Structures are given as C-alpha cells and as structure tokens.
Length: 122
Image 1 (cartoon, one colour):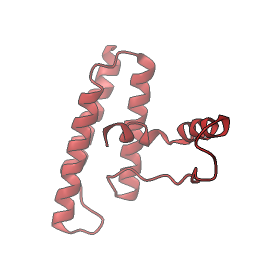
Image 2 (cartoon, one colour):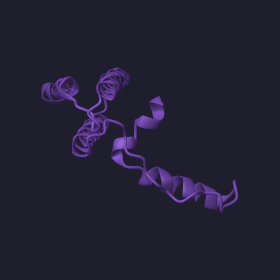
Image 3 (tube, helix red, strand yellow):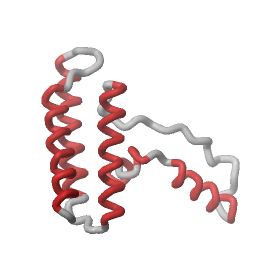
Image 4 (tube, helix red, strand yellow):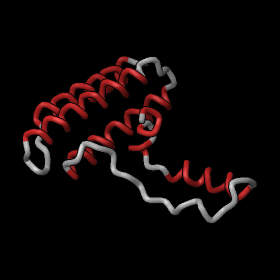
C-alpha cells in the first residue's frame, strides 16, 4: 500500500468516527441515535479489520469507493444502514442450467458498490 493510499484509508476511518460522534437519528429519539452510532462504529471496525491485509491496489480502490459511497448515502438519507436493492425474483427459472447461471451473473453484476461487502459480513 502506498503512503498516499494509506493516508486516504486512515482519513476515511477518522471521518467515519467523526460522523458517528455527531450522528443524530432521523427520528431524534435518544435510543435510536445511540443504536445507530453503535452500528456505525461496529460496521466500520468490522470492515476495516476484515480488509486490513488487502494488498491489491484495485481491490483497495474498490473498498475505498464502497466506503465513500456508503458515507454519502448514509449522510444523504440520514440512515446508516445499507439501502436494500430490489431485483426481480428468480423463481421463474429452473434451478439448473444456463438460464439460472446467467441470472446469477446478472444479479452479481447489478449489485451496487455500497453493498459488495455487506453480504460477506452479515
């Protein structure tokens, strides 16, 4: 990891904790605010620790982009949790064959960047 990338990652980590410190839930209730602050801190620690040994520059950049996207979405909607995506159900195809594999591939490609790591830790 280059020094510039390291600074960028550490800056994002500090930014997340500053956001968590100032976070106010949309409802304004104290218990919801506390739960959301705790979620932000726990999620950041989990994801940063999971990715601490990543050395591939492309993968590091992808993680940085995901982090920035989740920060922007969280601040915009005032919701710290990842926004769900709605894809058509796969119940219409058979569970075997080329069509099923093709739909699986399309689902994987269509997943937004801010949800790439969320499924891995949930």
